[in-house]
Length: 227
Image (cartoon, rainbow, N blue to C red; front, side, top):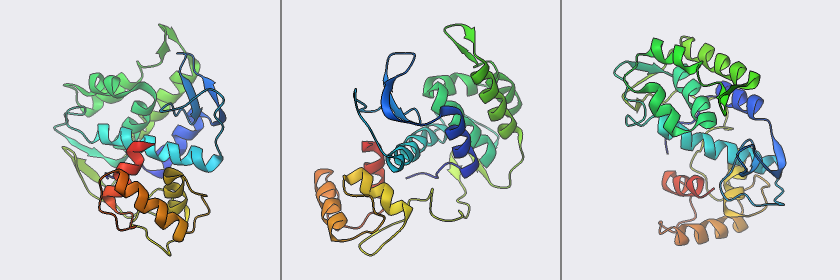
């Protein structure tokens, strides 16, 4: 599993997407829930705040993988953490195709300017999109210490566990356990007990993984991609 999105960018996505715990149809007619999550959403579906947060983390990781892929961001310069996070927010809203178009053959300065053009829906400028693109551009232009180059990522120290997918097993506790419990369909109490271990083994068997009850990188990858 790749490097997660930064906490500031995640909060920005939350702010602009908003959260709804009951399924609704977006302007494009797609059933949506949580912070703009659409995969597998059905009419009448209701989720908890913890499930909404888990969907968001999984979706952000999916879009982060696009940003880290040279096929979508064919950069020849160094991309810092803030630039990466800004592009993840952009892709979460506009899609991988728009990311590829935005970055193809452009320098960092050109990308920063072109971000502002993606503020329309059905050809009409929307104030909310204009505000979001400005926030993303501001983050993109903000200097940061850690850099990645051509998809090779330096792993910075993360504060706390909220957005880290650490290896977990029986006896583990915390928010990251809750995320996993939501994925495997058990009560998200944040305590990795016997029930969670059994559900983990079942999931691993279904996914063709090593059935050891330990949630490492391969189990996380399969789990997040299944959300």
